[in-house]
Image (cartoon, rainbow, N blue to C red; front, top):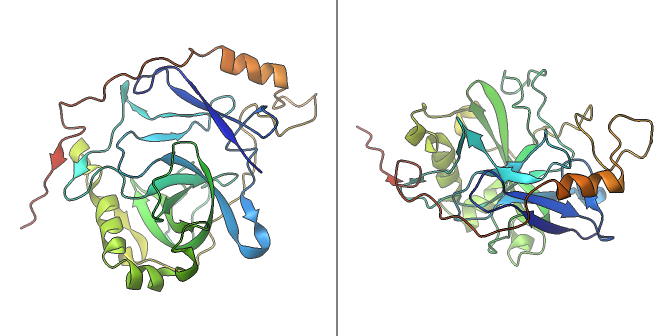
Length: 276
């Protein structure tokens, strides 16, 4: 199973979109049409990489848009970038999402006491390769961190690409601690402080910020919220035909020149946090 991507619009602008195609060249939704499991018998999951390691643009699957392309998150009309909170540079893992999962905002999690954040399950892939935006990889789960973001449950799955040379030696949280000392602590620190430059308080965590090996967090999508190509019934309001999918992509701007990333303001400055 292979997938390709097609860029539309100008990178670092509101017009930018990254659409997905299957092996037949047909447009698909990375949210609905890519299977959650790459190999269910081995608990190997697909992950759609939204943000490559060391980059700052806050990209995400647009769960409410037709075909669910990847686009840059927007706050108050402005594109969002994560700050370089010392000593970190951008995202410190390949960051993405498991397709066909959803953290239900109407369901209170028994472990965290908070409802879901209405997004797919987030994944921090810790392998040696810097992935490309839109790359679909196969991962094995090593553990989870339960972040509480503004009162919502926002699970962070630690995983490694099964094709990574280190994958055979990493099977759970204790292996990360042993083979990549400091990485888990850096992960908690990053998630705790990455919104502080935007004037928000530090994030909190369930389990006192401890990582867990196994927690039941994979909620399948319960309803389809927009048109997508995985619905085959022509009378369904959510069915998106091949021609409709082409029209969705054709309605966006052709791929153009990349705009410069903002180099002023608090968005991309290195932020030092002094703790007394």
